[in-house]
Length: 416
Figure 1 (cartoon, one colour):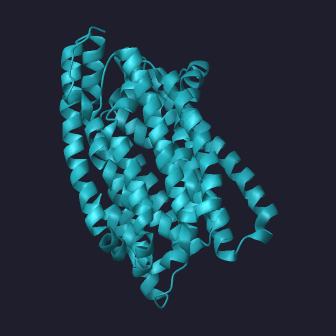
Figure 2: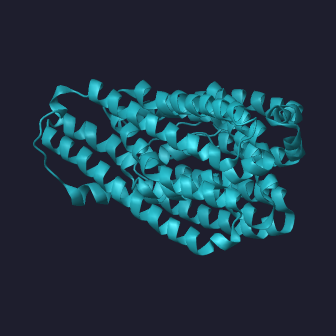
Figure 3: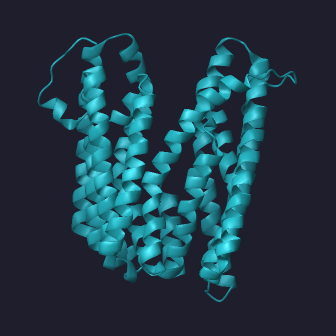
């Protein structure tokens, strides 16, 4: 986390708000297109590989890995070609730095998408550390080192498309790291050359997941893209920095969900409702305490934190306050998203995500047009509120569980 934060501070400072806004615009497109390109295999591999290993269906494991890599490669190239065509026909409306950034970004798309696949394969074979290190340490370290080298060798001058060239190198080296890690850590049973394919089954499982992943990415990233329509790139850059800082609020919830996920599954399917509710209440207290501490810190020192990225970003203080309100609401809802995924209500969650993504897009167009950067922040926060209220209503109704901080004040055990 620290090196990711440092890399973002470095980029924001050396690029300046204008070029950083162009960088964030392209990066938002990369995340949305990447969620489509990985075709749900980011999630389905984690589910299917352990299942095949338990059943000793090793030829299916080899077939699944080969198919997922090929499918994601082809999908990402096709999406990239389509997007490149769109850029080509609209290039007259783009400034040169934005045009070059988008072109190089699309070049990153195949390897960016494949990084999801290789990371999920490592997680599925219980190499969790190796699945996390490349994206949290290796890539930001390469970006930071490469950016410094380029900055000082180019007379302290760097543009957004220069950063995307460095990003391309970082994605490639990260992918190589993933491949080497897999080759050295994969079980012996994964090595036979014989392969069996259950393509229909794999696609049926993966497709709902790609919809959910894409909708989540739209909710998180579309504000930057839509804001770019109404304001100058420097305002987009300020908004990008604000969103980076606001995500610190969600750190406790994200970390807690990684830990309690297996326990929620075990307790739910063993129908131990009392223990499960107790676990949710305890985790909600912990998340609330840490989140509140971070929230107060950002409220008090938000302008100073923004100043670390550069003095021009301090203009986004009130935008930051709106964004952290949304992240605080998200943390208050606790593990609602996780519960719906684990307890078999993925289709309900998918419907909520689709509705929330459409809401996010609609509100962003209206509010960005009316209030600019603060409108984008307000649209994001209202969407998070609606999203979490809908998720909680399904959790309450379908599971009789209360994952919020308020469960600590009114705890009642109900049978499943």
